[in-house]
Length: 185
Image 1 (tube, rainbow, N blue to C red):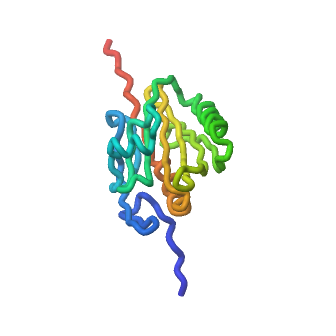
Image 2 (tube, helix red, strand yellow):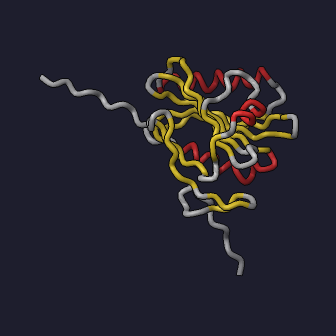
């Protein structure tokens, strides 16, 4: 009898992606103001690898990657004002900029969603790299009135294994806004 494969979820005890088993757990960033479920095997990328993979000076401050650095999740807190209503505009503007920088990129989905009470914009695309093609999801959100830009990147050959999982990682993002201070009378 043929059995149906159960959909993979990052909330399972362990899931097989490609040839590896992964355990996802919440990881906190920016003084515990933002969390996202990432594979426990992802670690901070070392400085030499960071410079090689992200050669520009404005590289992301947070880069979590698998052992060989081929699959990475990044976050960068940007000193630019951003509030939830402007996430759509930032998402479309960044997509246009990426498209102009490399017209050969193949774009798939562009969306802005309410995720855990927060507007998060994202788009995904296939691009060429020195050693083949990459699959990238770029995403954008506001944190304390400032922009946070993030990405998920993997070799395009792993696209089918990782696309749905990467979207589940985005769906797991939670922002913990500073509570309003109560004024005592």
